[in-house]
Image 1 (cartoon, one colour):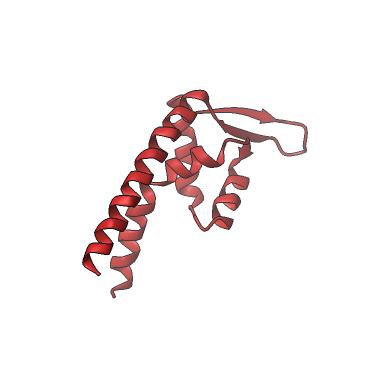
Image 2 (cartoon, helix red, strand yellow):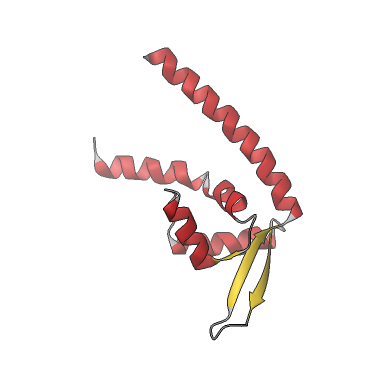
Length: 111
């Protein structure tokens, strides 16, 4: 299989799921770099150049809240899923599970 072709399609597949991954992970507050590490450990690697603009966009949309922690030498902005973000996450998760069942069913038909 052509590596570049596969990489492009994998990137497209992940692009549609990174919002759901962030909303699910940010039930507990995390700063950006910790979120990157958490997602990576879960097998959902995201580039910082993708994540940080996404966090700002989700915050602007009211789906995340944030606050600065200045207790340490280096201030960090912590993000958390807002109530509106939790509602969206629930809807997206339902749709994700429905799509997963459909794909599994289709894959089973071709075997």
